[in-house]
Image 1 (cartoon, one colour):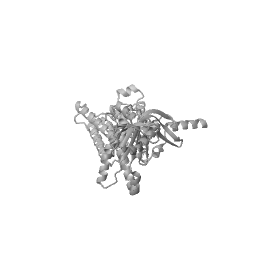
Image 2 (tube, rainbow, N blue to C red):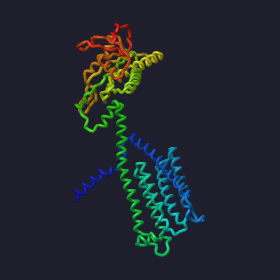
Image 3 (tube, helix red, strand yellow):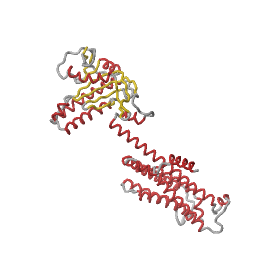
Length: 464
């Protein structure tokens, strides 16, 4: 029996998360949850006001079924009090004054107003107190309880449900106290045809209130734990995006298989290598803060351009940037996108350098090398330190081409193969070709295309 009980408790813990689970989430996740709860409270209040307005219209559109000199008009009074309470809560929420104690007071108050309205119906129709027990407005009790579920906090559902049960017991007690003759019957049909009270029917109402409250509270307890995980997951993606490219971060968090070294995919991609010219000399003349500020400006300028053209940042290497187009995700226009990105980068760098010169600051240039070909996009490293990267001849060639700019006195170059591929993909800008260039580290001479203007006079390029 002891072992069976332990197994049942273990299963129950899996179904019902511990009450302290919500307190274990990081503070920033808790703040996000509170923001969602704030918006939910506004939604609850707006829905309540809409329901009150609808009921007011319906009430005004039908003739009253009670005497003009009735002691009280329960529906108009109840709707007015309910609307005032909802508007007060809306004001407190919008002004940041809705504390948990005030929220608890309004949750109890709105249910108390509904119960008082139901109870006052026997005065409105000038009938015995038992009439209130037959009110069809009892259905609105479940609506109020259900609306409290929008905050994703079980406590408000439980408070609303508990208030409803206490209120209904108070109405039942009042009906018994003011009843004449035999107020109770065991016959269900007799209870429907008279003012006599059927205990079984009242028990069913209370049981329904209890079960709806309990089920909603349990569902919210589980949903809140899942919501906390979801918010934590979203923040994890946002945090990963600070260290990884957005597409890589989504791959990491959305991977259905275990992430491990050795996983890779073959891609046709364009690889772009960027380098800040004269950075070494600049660091010698600048202080540490100025060096970091210079790098920050440079990276903040170039990275959005790369991303806007569908590129992904593979890594930062000091003043170097390695980017890929079509490696993280397939892109049929990877070459054209990459060349368009280089054009935009060079234009932006020209403006940036001019602005820095006007401010009397050092204004280093940017060199770019671009190559296309098959690369492997995958995971490298050791199980405790992994990294997504691109590997292949195109990566090595892009780095060598960036350095080759100094030989050709250009700012950005690519291979003729990459240029022709980009042209077939829609890149329409005409660029000069440099035939049979000897690139350091490359065995055979290759035809290159200058993507940016020559810095100084260079040998006349061959026409395409």
